[in-house]
Image 1 (cartoon, helix red, strand yellow):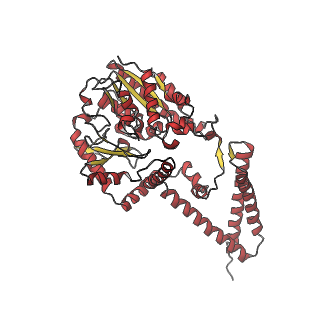
Image 2 (tube, helix red, strand yellow):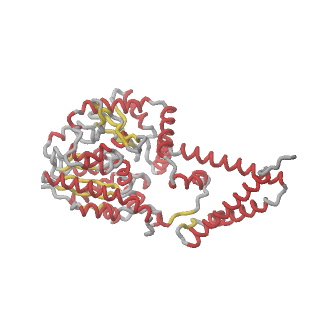
Image 3 (cartoon, one colour):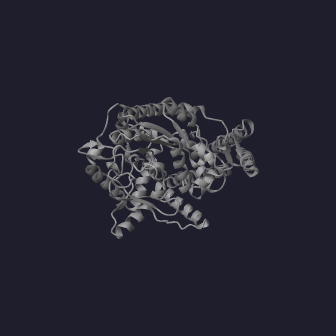
Length: 495
């Protein structure tokens, strides 16, 4: 007796074609609901609408019509469809990983900036930071790559973050860089920012630490460190022209918990008259999400905790130098493999990663087939309730951090100011709104900290984008730094 086949090639082909037609219909419904019915998104032009509506409807009709074809033809069409789909998603996966690697992004960024600089009549140094370090060493200058606390935080299997640095067998998180070395930092305006680091690895002139108490100490991230303008043109240097005893302890990547740690380790012993807390709207809360998962950093919320970092700077320098030299000597292949491993490990399956993958976002973007925009990016007031709920714990933690900072500064009779720094994307034609701005400002006011809102200062300018290099890069140019300093100096009182 001939065995009955329950699942034939023809049935499999029919299933594939039916599924493909159904997916196309779902896409058509998606476009209709989000673009035509609710208006949550819109098409940038009629070409996008035609391709999205017409293409989905036509493809659905063709796939369902193919169900009427002879058996072998259906099998051939289904096989081709599966092969093409596999190739497209393999390409999407490969490009998503490759173009998400830091080294690739940096090369693309340098190439774009060089092209933009050329069109503005500006010479642009296209070398990488590592190339600059090696070239300086050939000239007898002991230069090093910049190193910063956040890059030292490594993700553990339980989801927490621990420092890559060990001193005397215990975990230590340095809050400055390598001291008394030429540090190569960044280039956004044409020439690299390099400087001689101070006694604790920060961007200050020599011998400022001996002035006790300082007039002003500035806390913050790369903006407060002085990215990417020359040393005498950043806003802390501008403030220093009026108050010579001004220190910056800002460093790349610092978020609120790292800044509180820096306050406890380095600022509290100095007891300055004024502390400026510079908050950058684009990433400080995002940085806090990582910092909050460091058990070591969370201990700074406990009154009195300190790592006593200032007491063993030589040990910190040796550990940081070993870490930086490993990065400097790393081959291109080794660096790429390390970045791939980190990228894959950091991009776990979630709605935020699956959705762009399913939509072939990388492929469509590189083919110029992205026609839709979300209304939130167009300056509307459509805020995500899901995002607000997810961010609430970090807003609450941020408020606690500010209150602890306020208490510490008040204990020695100093004055703490909160300086709100805006992002470039706030002023672009398709503006990206910072949804947490009201809660952030309210947190500072709840803590009793005077607020200096630089966003209002920038908005008073006819062309805020002119305050950014080539109107494109994220950090402020000379004019932007000067404007920040002028507003701060108008707003503070140093007794």
